[in-house]
Image (cartoon, rainbow, N blue to C red; front, top):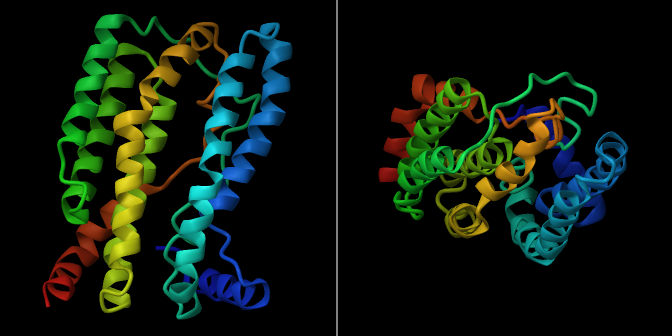
Amino acid sequence: MLKHCKSLLLCATLLLTGCVDGFEKHLKDAIELYRERKHQYAEQTDGATDALFRKLITTETLLLPVAATFDARAIPHVKKGVMIIANDFVPMEDNLGFDYPMAAADVFSDELQTQAQQILSELNATDSSDAFAMTEAVNTALLDIDEFERYHNVYLPMTKHLVESLGFGALHSLYYRCESAGKTYRLGQDLMKLQAVAIKLGNPLSYDVEANQFHQQGVGILVNDLPHIPFLKEYDRYKMLDEARLTDCLAE
């Protein structure tokens, strides 16, 4: 979880502005970044990457009203110091950067796409109403994705990003429920279910397939643009220090 000092700063901001800088701000920052990178990559690829960025910007724009409702629902909890939604989205600027060097990938073939989809199918089979189970499933899926990328020399940045985000929210929701005596349960569940549906129906692999033609040229589209989400680091801390405590807390 993020440090308490940041939580206090966010609480102060909430009291002054009456809003939560969470889901909607993350999407707006993503749209701004994608618009900037769209022009940068266009110069590098003679405009061949424009279609992918138009798709990204459209998708994020359509989600803005949904994100605003999640931020609004979080306000009563954030006012009490439980930072649900506010601490569940990482800053977009925490990306590798447009010019970060990337080793050229191999072809993301139809056969490999089928294998990658199997990883997601196993994740999708997890009960999206069980945050404990989802946290474990995301950890397994991310380890499998990392191994898949290394073994086949392909990149799955969008798939990894959405899976990390799902796990981040699911793991955090366990802490929030304990801190709030269960009052954040419904909001945490709804966020987890929304992100699970985004993976099931949003087809993140299609973005990675489309980006692969550029990855083969050493162009780091998506790999260098999506922010790092520290799910695996937080998961390790949870397993070592907090799993038993949270299990007991939420069993009461």
